[in-house]
Length: 189
Image 1: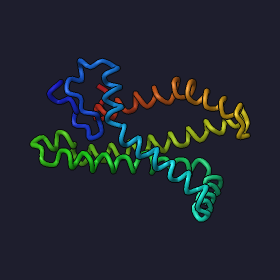
Image 2 (image 1 turned 120 degrees about the horizontal axis):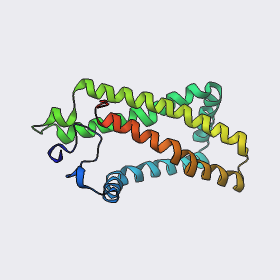
Image 3 (image 1 turned 180 degrees about the vertical axis):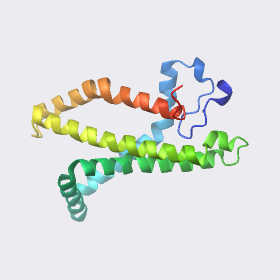
């Protein structure tokens, strides 16, 4: 209901009247909610890119990581994605939610129980580990189909298939359903 628009989730965007909001309004709210974190992530990525091409020790460290990824393959993809797309975001969301609701009279309702937060952590770790393996396998398949040469044609083909086939048909819809399930506190009813 609209009085409990957050459903106890610590990582949902709080929208006052969730039942009566248009998809466009929800998208705008999501954009506003994620704009600053998105900018921070992009700046962090740009910083790493600049450091890679300007600081020899950083380049060497990243090249060692690339060797580890080649050596451990899908296991590396699972662990790295679970940490960077699962564990770290969960920590940030949990800390942010704690400080947002710690003085609220509805703290437990908004923040959730310890058990629910552990379930969320496991959800993020498992889902992101699987997605890391899936994306790695998908990119390997694209290399088989389109090649792995860093030329314009290969890059365009890979981006088009990634953005307009994989993302639209599988990645986004499957994430939507999984995260809806999580947002309902893992209750299928």
